[in-house]
Image 1 (spheres, rainbow, N blue to C red):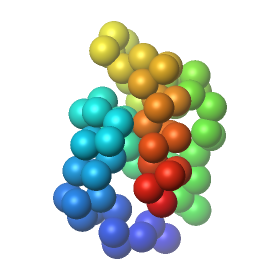
Image 2 (spheres, helix red, strand yellow):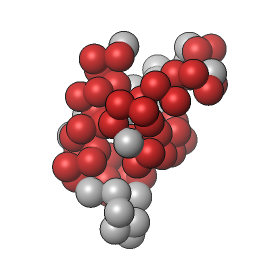
Image 3 (cartoon, one colour):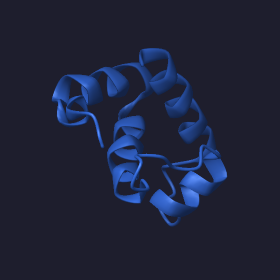
Image 4 (cartoon, rainbow, N blue to C red):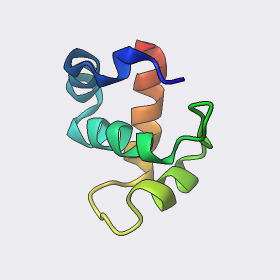
Length: 74
């Protein structure tokens, strides 16, 4: 089950403040692609294809950075 903290604005704001607004967008859009255990493939290329395949401002590098910052923030 998803953690209730996922919906708290402070968590997404911390991610956006540290990794940029694209990171917050990636994080929130990724939720729709989680499996029933709350997991998704961690490959930035796969995430790009799932979340924003035609959104040019969301790059693979932005996804890599978002994943690194999200991991560091916990």
